[in-house]
Amino acid sequence: MNAPTRTPEAAALKRIAAYADEAWDQRIVPALTDYIAVPAKSPMFDAKWAEHGLIDRVVRDAASWVESRQVAGLKLEVVRIEGRTPVIFFDIPATRADTTNTVLLYGHLDKQPEFNGWRKDLGPWTPKYENGLLYGRGGADDGYAVYAAITAIEALDKEGIGRPRCVGIIESCEESGSQDLPVYLDALKSRLGQVGLVVCLDSGAGNYDQLWLTTSLRGMVSGVLKVEVLSEGIHSGDASGLVPSSFRILRQVLDRLEDSKTGHLLPDSFHCELPTQRLEQARATAAILKDEVWKRMPWACGADGGPTLPTTTDPVQGLLNRTWRPTLSVTGVDGFPDLGSAGNVLRPYTAFKLSLRLPPLVDGNAASLKLKTLLEDNAPYNAKVTFHPDGRAGALGATGWNAPELAPWLEGALNAASQAHFGAPVGYIGQGGTIPLMSMLAKGFPQAQMMVCGVLGPKSNAHGPNEFLHVPYGKKLTAAVSQVLAAYQ
Image 1 (cartoon, rainbow, N blue to C red):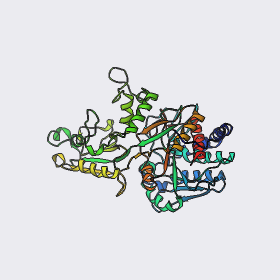
Image 2 (cartoon, one colour; image 1 turned 45 degrees about the vertical axis):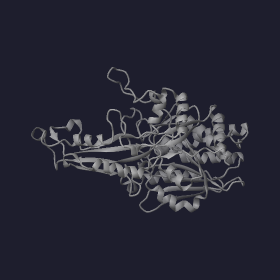
Image 3 (tube, rainbow, N blue to C red; image 1 turned 135 degrees about the vertical axis):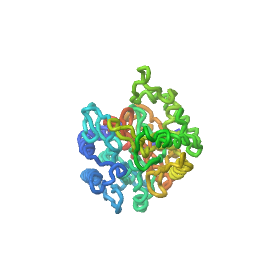
Image 4 (cartoon, rainbow, N blue to C red; image 1 turned 180 degrees about the horizontal axis):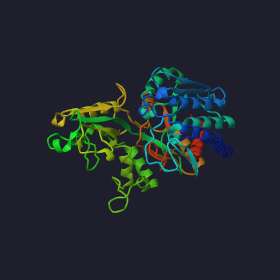
């Protein structure tokens, strides 16, 4: 049985929902429209981010917006450490006397790069609001978070409904693996207090019909694998057959890691045991989403004119493949001329940008070191093979996260909020992406409860073309966060 929760009366819940609606229409959508127009790419994608000043701009804009709301007792600081991306830290005192713990609200303002394939009337930095969807890079991932968090707090204060102390950390390095965040968490530790609940608004939803709680996140190792065989390109007719192809060598090296027929990752150390509870939740979620687990993908036409097939059409296995099993992707290449400039030349090197998604319980830094050894040792033909992982020493990979067991009060509050604002019970779903903060906070605050959720539902396509924010879902999620804050125990 779930514990009783402090659920506001029905009339108050309607007013909270109406306040969230008004805030999104009048304040949040306009603010996000301005935000989307700024190409504030994460440092991994803009080495001159400090010089360009775009990250600073979106941080200043968000901080100014928060301060303009004049929430009672709010203190806000843009915290800056030399050589690091800035962080917004805000602190709002409790309006309820019976709790001394803190709720930590999290989001980020840095963005992924442009990518290609945008609809002709859309673009990453040209926001467009159409049929309830706000298109453009970063609105859903994760620019909306700070605006929604403040609005959720405002809605309660307007109703006179008590809530705990709330602090916010809004970073600007998440899309680069949150490399700067550990330094800020250490610097801010004494100001955080005892964190009892984390509300992270950087995740996704299985559909737009109910509140979804994220139960796990994968980790990730990314980096550049490079194979060099020549000091310069030479005529392929003169050299091929004598000089080994750098691409063929790279294929051999990747065969150590992945079965190319199935996509199965070969080293046991990159796998972990699946918890029974997560399997049960995957089955329940599969029963809700059914074939939409795989049909929602933008499949190209296959050999027979029908869509390309997924790795599995079993919804349960599909959910597990994208959340609890390691997967390798090649996300970029170097050493190749474009097709129009591709002469008969044996290229001197081939380089791939690798993205290795790791199960939630595999240590990211350890996996990065193992991957480097696996790829570099005993190179075919004595070629120069190097793997340079992203990150900094001691944090060369991001570790995933498995949610702690839900406290009865939070389970009850989530269900009540989902029923109140969506008319359906809360859903539980693992996510294949990575939020490095979660594993950091799990270590720093092992007793804290976690509400990890977000607006990235079907077709929202974060990081890709035509990314959008589903505004009606954002409104309901904001109201749901308010209700959970009111229920905090």
